[in-house]
Image 1 (cartoon, rainbow, N blue to C red):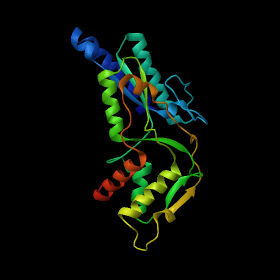
Image 2 (spheres, helix red, strand yellow; image 1 turned 30 degrees about the vertical axis):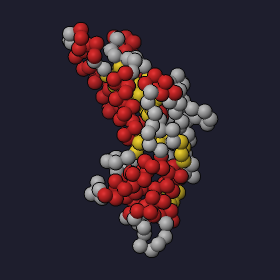
Image 3 (cartoon, rainbow, N blue to C red; image 1 turned 90 degrees about the horizontal axis):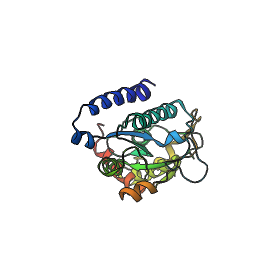
Image 4 (cartoon, rainbow, N blue to C red; image 1 turned 60 degrees about the horizontal axis):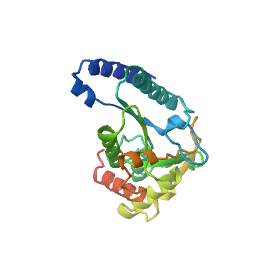
Amino acid sequence: MRTDVDGPFALLEAAHDYWQGLHAEAAARFRFLHVSTDAVYGSIAEGRFTEDSRYAPNSPYAASKAAADHLVRAFNRTYGLPTFITNCGNNYGPRQYPEKLIPHMIASALEGRALPLYGDGRHVRDWLYVEDHCRALLDVLERGRPGETYNIGGASDRTNLSVVEALCDALDRHQPRADGKSYRTQIAFVADRPGHDRRYALDCTKIERELGWRPASTLDAGLDRTVRWYLDNRAW
């Protein structure tokens, strides 16, 4: 709550004060970009979330992110602060914090540990390669309409199990186990975590239509590049 609610509120207040002190030309160029998550929408059984979907967070984390989104929107509507909100899918790629699913699974596989998947492993996420996300954020900053929200997804809906299996297959190709077995044999299922949404899926029509952005990387190609990066940067 301190990070996701108090933090954005402090940043919004500071940005608002700074923005008010700018001369007209600089004030017109100023932008405040808030990077949020698809978790604020809750879980969806069918279809995809649009920017107009109802907020229905199911975990304290998602609720804290939703609160920040509402604060950003309120500063835009109340004070005219030129803000953007972006709601993205699951990021992956080089240099990701090692506790996250993909780097954690790669490290665990290489160290011979179990690859733990929550529940039945069939929770669906929209996976977004980090460089595609960065391009989208730049497009929003440079050409987006202040006050708007943009969904950013990788057009790569996949279950957690299938993602881990793809990682195992890539490791089988690039760093085979000494015993010749597949890394898939290390996959293990553990008790599901509380508030674990079953499915996220984003409709990215708006950013495609207005800004011409589309993901350049497929999930399979992105995962292969990611695995090779971690193999080449084991110290990470």
